[in-house]
Length: 370
Image (tube, rainbow, N blue to C red; front, side, top):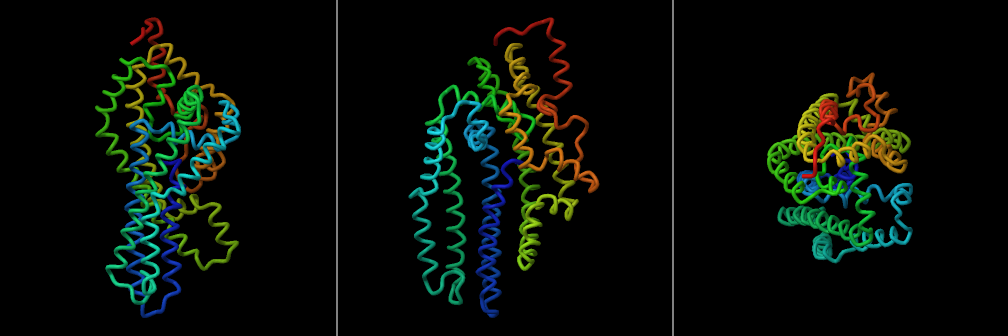
């Protein structure tokens, strides 16, 4: 998923590079043992990161996206002011998240990892057994799983207990406004349009019908992202001994440097995103058909004419994902993905143009309430 790739990278690289730093300082006769541990840790964490990404995407599909996107939007002062979130509310949300990160649920794994580290030099020491190293990798994986669970629950609690129903609805409206930036549509965002029970049942049936294709798309997307992450890890490993200013320059253009060095991966990602667009357009067309004309017009207005605070939020999303205008222009000489005219305008990819035209042609025959 484009928006969250940045945060996913951090978890992998932190563990992988920490292991690499330990191993670098080991005696040469222990190099092979440490190399095995490092490879095992990286393999385990990459597999867990794959699972985390799939879980995150599935959370969007199954209706938890409002909490996740709320946390992204609420980091922006303009958005908080736009939906009326007070400083007191925001501080309460931040406090819940801070307590979540200090959760005692992590303590058991932390205690056992600390115990392992203190035994005969720990899993990185010269007396480390295969059993000790395997247990260390296992604990790292369990810790990652628990963190994902606890953080997701903490985000849900922070948002739902501190935002008013009106503000939560504004978050759902914000998701609709930002639909063009979402590689995976979050069906629950349509709750902002005041759905009837019958409409909810219709949307649930559509989700059930489309779920097999959704699962295929997620697998393809995660595969492509994992290959990108592996290249990032390799690139950072190669930059370890570079001068600080050289590393800083490389990090400032990390995504661009990886794309240029690995055009095959960029092509693969473009193919995945294109197939994802086909799936997304089909899903949207089915879901949009459930909306009444009044709901349709409300949705179109949120997409085509977002409030000022959402224009800024969307611009920030594009910046983080590397899809803003300046980066798009800089990619053209390298042969990467080049959007068509108007691709960066509001609503340009949120509503399939053919569907928009067909829907507008129905106006002489208004749809009633479902």
